[in-house]
Length: 640
Image (cartoon, rainbow, N blue to C red; front, side, top):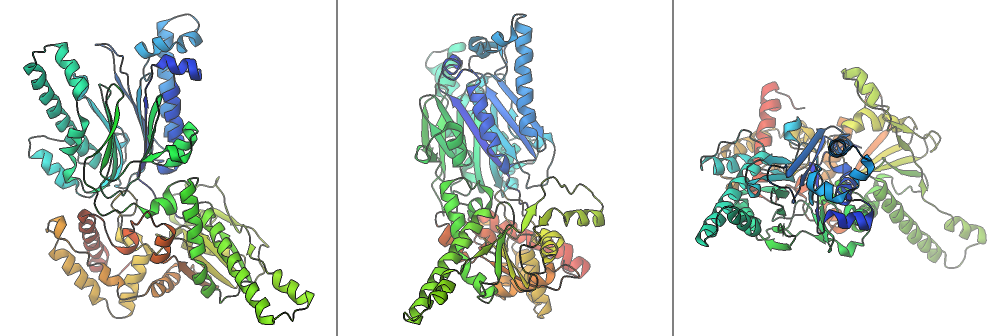
């Protein structure tokens, strides 16, 4: 219903054979480039603000470019960067020979020596901004140049760091002067500094061994240890991350945060190594079963040397495991077998609350979903209601004690769940009008309805969505559209719990005023005469503003201790009801227990529970509450 922005997706491809091998076996030396394109398109859901790729050509001679990068902004960025890459290759081929260009383009030996982006190592990135920073300079990969191949570094990441300023200080104190304060750029400079030190260490070793000139260079490139680079950089990192990188001499790495917040999966055989943010991406791109794909473990890095040797290393010890549950509820593609099963279970687990919301009147209820991400949870909800009806049928037959006529038995057995596709998303409609009134009117028509799908004034209408965060689309569009069917009662169901807290690990929801759950709790506190709790929380947050992140405490949770989720949900209905809509409305949320029952292997739930896995998350939460109070409560003496 409401588009949440996940920060990004990553993809890596390392070819283990010469380019001519792929030309002979697969008909093209572009095998690696084509696989990267497919992997990025299959992760398009993870980032539509920009995309970029990097390529390392390991056979380049001195004087020839060996590290290539292409970036673009916008929803069509993937197509744009690959179109530019293929244009660069075609232009180069045209300059090499006036003979048949097709023959030149297919020549793997020429490609490996002369063509841009004809390399053995590729890295791709899809971007969603969660910091508000826009522009091509913020699109990954980030590149650090040097005349020594081994000192060139290119990185991209799926991450947010909560302590950018702290990381900045650790490198500034060493005398570095970064030109940009963004987490990716700071990490680039930090890793680049450690890469320089690693190269210098090997330089001294090579000299001690009596090597000189190109012998020293070869020694450095053959022995550089990116594990050392990561180990001496990442101790200060606080956040959720998968950081990927390549060097100009052909080394590569990917590392996952020690809490396991952000995901990464990899696959390797004697032809190729590949890594992606989602498992089905690798399954589809390489036509492999799920058991061929491995997950990068918390605190673990996978390291690939210039000669293609792959090994995993535990860089940081695993900490409190907090794999992001929102990845499973919303962000990752539902084509993953485990995610599909989990989302169905989310729907099943909601049946008791929905029954209560419709007063157990299943016969006079139509079930549907908000396209398109809630579809799998809808299947689970319907399955759960079918199981409920089966139990009810068995109970009715048992209570009759065998004294049922064929007509009575048929009536019991014919009870069915009524499901319809009530809401239809008009994907061609875009809310491009900027003026407020016109934009709201247009937004109200992004979804359409199936007229005649329920009996006006008789049927309840239950619609399930994956999450309710801001509530804007509910208020401006969904509720008003569903009301056109004139149901007896509208029940909006969220397959995830109430979002109460900001996220600082890669989801675009960092400000307190964005959450309808938080605003409803604030309104309840004011309406019930307990607004002093808000100022008390503010004072406590302010008192620890300058505390080290490790000593900060979540005081915002005290607001939610005052009210039940049902009370917050009822206040949401009051706040989200469009003017003129009088239909009875209920909002039903997944419980935390229901979430963890459905998704037991991904316990990270800080946006629902306030249990932040890292100290930096708690510190940022307190800062967000202070900002909210000063921007809205104290400044205007009113609460938004």
